[in-house]
Length: 398
Image 1 (tube, rainbow, N blue to C red):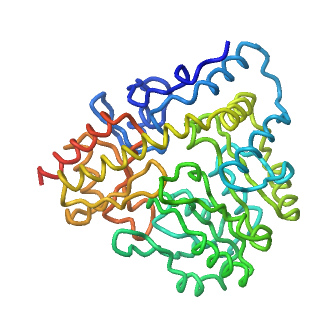
Image 2: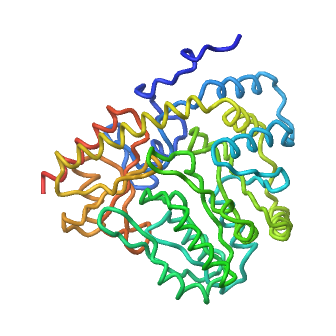
Image 3: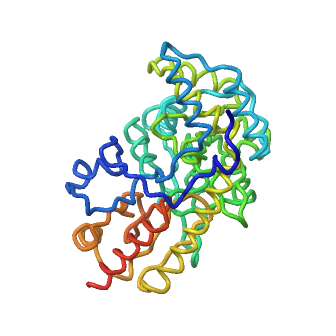
């Protein structure tokens, strides 16, 4: 029996207890921060507090009831769902042979660094940016080339003049689009200028677009590889259904490589590292999400937009010493706490001891992140209000 649209609606206000489920966000506090207790509110790890769409849950239950969990091979429906989603949502015609699967975008980025560089090569990142990028560059024996973003008023911009100076010494650039943590949706003009510079200098672009479905009204995401045929041949797009549909625990990442030589080299790396095919539940979840998740996503985006606006209003009214870099995408807010005059360790202690609030510290995102924190607002509004109230009380205690 199929569900009606009303029956499929998700109650985004529902508070779901995740403690004791192996959740990194909720159960990993002692290992990561040295704290534990039911009174701590974790708003750090970038997954949401929302149930995945009912068609995805139904598909997983059906697969579980089958009772056999042998080795998996991606069926045609999996590729058809990905192709349809990319075409409908992003105007991008992705061919089946372009698609490779990895257990996570971070895994894909590391494997691509290994595939596309030699030890000692320069790799450009644009901090403050998702911290596994730097770690992946360094762990694979390459040199980090910093092309720092500029905070221009209330909005971050790329420093393309500095980038042009760095590219002659680079083999690879890792792009974050939309950007985590600053929430920028890069315009097609910005991306095209970056792409032309990389083409000129022979630098391949690895574009992490895992948040590309979570873009707010007034902004439009541009897939980097869709800018032109030339750019497509010198770029790789890494994305997943994980942020969109809250599926990161199923590791549903896909890597899209239009260039046949790069595809062949990447396939060799996957074999050399023993990377398996996606597991049975990953295949079912991605297929169902991309085939049946569009109405749910529309409701999610409306709810997240409401959370974003609530957060901005609250901080402006109740915590005027802080400033929100208004996110254009994602469910992550980048809060400027520099006016408090605290060192990074002092700021973290304030939040943990006074607010019992766990956020990501900005300095971990690299140069330009000092004095900032990242807050996950992908949660019921009451939880968001609780977190912001705790934050206001901690700031007022100074």
